[in-house]
Image 1: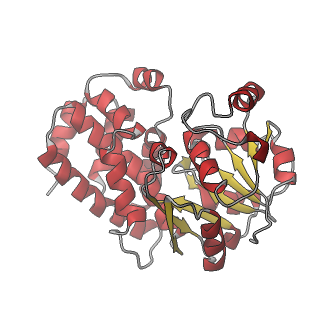
Image 2 (image 1 turned 60 degrees about the vertical axis):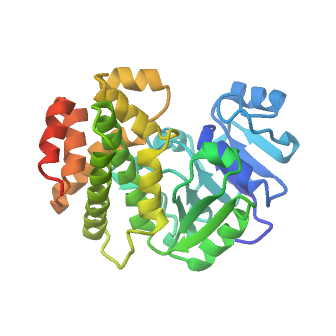
Length: 331
């Protein structure tokens, strides 16, 4: 990855917009794919994303927009995917060009539904992208705080430390610090699970459990996360690092957390469908809960928190009953 490489962003949401803001600090220009031409036209007219982080102004002369993913891939070297995981396959199904010579960066903190695969595995196995050309962004980094230029820390996971360092230079904005990790699978699975634990925290908040219980819930969630990561991808890792624990904490506690908000609505008595409709945003943890539950049929890890969330969301067990049972299993 050299300094002349062309960076592309795939996605039109808040995280894609935040990443564009970061990258334009170091790159002369970027390519940007958005599915709807009307969103592009409005973005160019207003010089800001009309739907997300609308307080962030852009020099649109430095952005080459396109609704054609094949054109984007043809003219780009590094592809940063920042779409909700349930929609990834929908975008890629239009793709006619190969990806095996591209650098793929996953900014998706989710898992591919139906396939039950983390994003790096999906690109490697389905699109034949070499492991060393796949990177994952992790860590506590809400798009809303990036928009406000509040200091944020990102971890770049990749099998190639050289690629990770090179991409870290591209993210070298004054309000962003980067670290690198060779535990790409671990940080991806942690990014998936922290959304589930945030739904659990939200459910407990909706049920009016207090801060004392929330602290116990999250301390148990850290241990559960470690057990699952070690079972699926055994290697030395420090679960206390910000890519794991830090991301879990901010997602479980922050007012910007979609998953916590979704869980809180469930705890207050909303149905899953009603909560999803009212939010008008994707809570990745809803899909992740089913995926991790099914993956664990192979590993049989003790994960009572994820099991409780699965019972509530998919087996329609009363949140009061499911969390009541969970309280007997926590320490």
